Amino acid sequence: MEKIASIISVGNEILKGRTVNTNFAHIGRILTFAGYRVQRGYVCEDTTEGISETFREAVKHSEIVVSSGGLGPTFDDITVDSVARAFSLKMVKNDHITTILRNHYSSLNLPLTPEREKMAYLPEGAGYIENPVGIAPGVVVNVGSCRIILLPGVPTEMEALMGLAKDQYLYGGVYCEKSVIIENMMESTIAPVITAIMKKHDGAVYIKTHPLNSENILPKIEVEVSSYGSERIDCAELVTTAISEILKAAESLKGRHDDATTL
Amino acid sequence: MEKIASIISVGNEILKGRTVNTNFAHIGRILTFAGYRVQRGYVCEDTTEGISETFREAVKHSEIVVSSGGLGPTFDDITVDSVARAFSLKMVKNDHITTILRNHYSSLNLPLTPEREKMAYLPEGAGYIENPVGIAPGVVVNVGSCRIILLPGVPTEMEALMGLAKDQYLYGGVYCEKSVIIENMMESTIAPVITAIMKKHDGAVYIKTHPLNSENILPKIEVEVSSYGSERIDCAELVTTAISEILKAAESLKGRHDDATTL
Image (tube, rainbow over all chains, first blue to last red; front, side, top):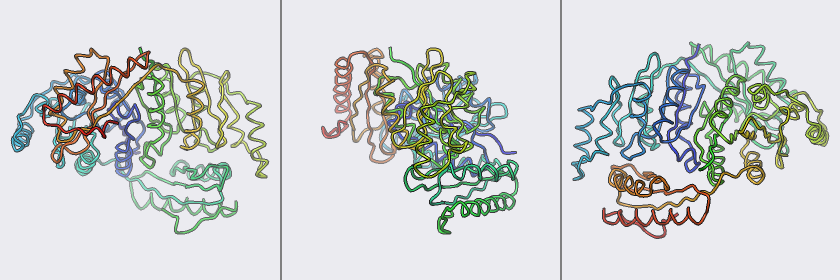
């Protein structure tokens, strides 16, 4: 059985639609391929109540929660503090991070202001992941049986830290996924076939169609087949079998598939 | 006081990171400029429990909820049915939509299968928005004092229906926003100034900095100032005043601003 994950995006800029949430997709992709089932996503405002409430909710449903945003030096970078409040943890200044910050700002001839020093405070008992491309470290907090990983919002920093977090902290199981593109095929035409194939495999594979055009003109769909499990070879075989069954059915429904479009 | 909105994205493809959630940003932008404060966002799986639970949660906190995804003809397009279940509403076949569907598929020489006919079922009492570029209509359900608007997930269809929904159903108040780009400026350097200016305006303007580079190299930030209110002229004036104050302070901190970069 796969482990359950949630993703939290912190930031008014996401809610307002100023920023397209590419971080969410990046984190979702890595969690999924690390074998987690990402079951819920949340976007919350930069307020203590909004952040605290969202993390408390996510932890209830998840074995791992990964967030991005709100770790920097500005007044509204309050993710770490809000998570500490959510779970009644004290904030403790970390000496190692303080040294990194002091060295960094002093190399730029800048003082370690309270806004900058804030980044050295962690919830008691928390771990951290040093930031190889920026300043704010990632923060790792265990709450009961759930692990929370807090990452910054700047995509390059988030990606670097998510890579490190993956190696150190993520293992949910095995996940395989394969897609084929079928032309001259409406979602509504292939729908009964998909349902039957999923039923035949008794929940071991999941099949989803994605329309690549509107149904009205030049119908074209991507059919995605995926499977969670514990052995890579079993998952891969299941996915390959289901793909063959789909293509055979599609052909009899006058769908066109080119081998080059197996993704 | 601005009205509160939530956005729900339905679909495993978002959670798995296969699809970058551009719909969320589009809906967020339109809701914000219609004067709503978008306070919460949710992403949920294509399961009845996942969708029902998410809508029940969102309705508790919102005057308007806009979702995208799950309105089509496949087995996992279950948003409308799940929303009906969430609020114990019967599903009723709509004659007008049935006629549209029958005409559409018969013009393509295709039968009205159960999968296709499913799109004609609405929760009792719900309204609908005809889809000018696709098949599945938008659905409008009022639950207590909250209005729920369900849109399809295909971006072109979502955008067309969101435009129509905006004209017919959205009015939250007035929102103004303006951004300036300041070079040679770190977030952590300007942070105390931003806090002071927000305090001076006593919550009437909101100021957020967005780093456009990492703090380490060529620091450059976008400063966004926004205001919600009831009169456009007041909001615009407040935003303009705060922008001038920020630029004056930035200059004294050796920041560079070019008039061309006022967005």
